[in-house]
Length: 177
Length: 177
Length: 177
Image (tube, rainbow over all chains, first blue to last red):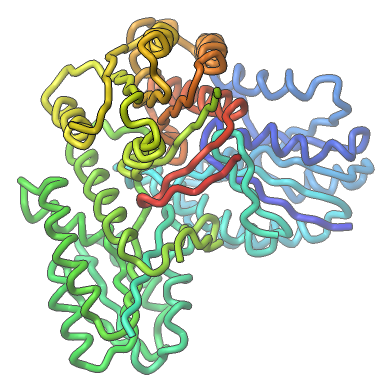
């Protein structure tokens, strides 16, 4: 049965840990779609922290920086019953760095395509998104575009999601569903 | 009957869309107080996005960058039953740029005056305020003052509001009322 | 009876005022642990604002920038029934500036030690922590480390806390307990 769950929250708010726990019922059939491109040591250590937590827990990891539709299809082909996309924030960042003309409008089109794939997935999809819009307006134009894209994407996915959770200090609050 | 509603949330969290929906019962008597001074193309496109959404929906728009008391009085004179002030964040920014000595103390006095007007308004007033205080402390002094002013203003209005809503990913959560 | 309460929220969200109100039942036995080192006029005026609010309300103030375990023990020795630690954010900042190699791992160890002290305290301990992780990723490495440490510390204390509150626009929302 198709189920879409969005998990948001600030940095180090417990989003990933909570999201992983949501897949505990699907131990041997759970897939992890990693969107991070490892470009430096800091990123590597952040990724390794997540990997260490998942080790030996029956996860299959797929790496995909851009094409989440393809990654979801591949997971479905391989029998995935639950998929964790960790995270949309890095994915949006990847899209933004690949295309200098990326905009909120393009984000909306891309999110629309993603939503079609999410609804087609024959199982539970959990998507992690950082809340990045509750600070001061960034001085940097690219950061403002990123913030707008992130908020737009979050709204669109939340609108179709069966559940939306906001994590604060490691505490998941259900805000929809 | 006087009713004061504060709607807060991060950037692109659905505050404006939700706030507009709160006035749907007052279609022909609803007023929009726009506080934005359009100083560049980016701002123009942000404003146009909001305008497009309101077009043909029976809104009367008043533009006022500083004197919200005057704008509320004008709306009342013209028969407004609901007024949407979009947004306080830009208004606070305007006040800060007009007066180099603007401070949290002056913000408190100005908010006190605004609250008197809000309570006098013969209908529903909805005020939109960005949550800007949940990021890292800004390095820039003006940004810190802005953040303090915004928080102070938000607290003062929330204290007298009949309802307060926090929007996250387009989902409005009622946190007071 | 031991009770641990964590109060979080953005800048100027009413955390301190709410936290102080939680100690009203312990007027003559309440202690305030101030973590701020006053290094400039802006900080002085922020601290004085807090002090003015507490004046004549039966508070005993202890200043401690680093060693919260020692401060809690001293408060207990002096008969404290409630202690307000205001705030963890400044304390984490102090730790970070004292040790150039401070990291999320060291934060976790330090928080573990603090938690031992919190559980031993023979009364109510209220801890204030700014939510700093809901803005754009800071460009500055130190700010990113700070943000990670703050989130880690918040999660760890929230996990053992009897109550956790999130303040938004002066409105305290109970998110645990």
